[in-house]
Length: 70
Image (cartoon, rainbow, N blue to C red; front, side, top):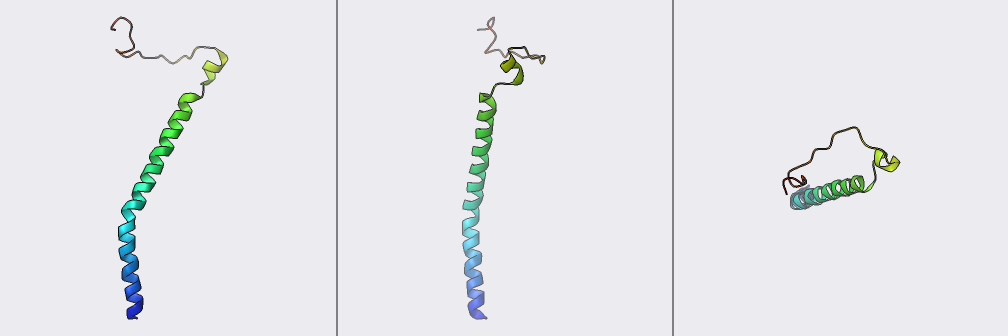
């Protein structure tokens, strides 16, 4: 019984040490996946751009893109 408790304590300590590293790796993978999805969405043309038409939704122009303010 004493040997089992020793193994249990070592396993619990190992889990406590590896938990932050595992959470960090999972977080990095999630961020990489989000960046990859965003880049993929940016690269593929929308339906209206591929047909050569105009979209009906209004585009807002920020101050850095406005030719009168630059």
